[in-house]
Image (cartoon, rainbow, N blue to C red; front, side, top):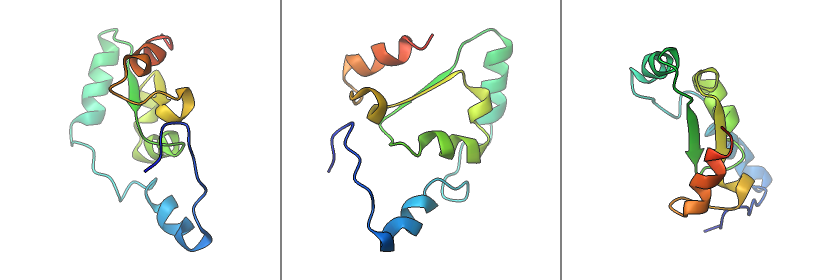
Amino acid sequence: YRRAGESLPPEPYTRELFDEFTTDHCWLPYSDAAATLEQLREQGYLLGVLSNFDFRLERLLQNLGLDIRVDAVVASFQNGFEKPDASAYRSAAACF
């Protein structure tokens, strides 16, 4: 278990598996996720992702085609606060 902000490089034999979890075939967004995000943006909402995921989050969202549908992406490793800590939410809100 690692705390927010701690990032240990994987051993060489696990690098492939570690990287695999940023690919689009390891995750399945809801079928209406992209359309819902687009609709919310068209209605004027600012959208963000706040996650306890690590530095791979932005690459994962890119591979899923969701990065272009949000205005901000904040992962706990960036700000050192994990959800449900209120500081994590304040950090994300500061992006807007």
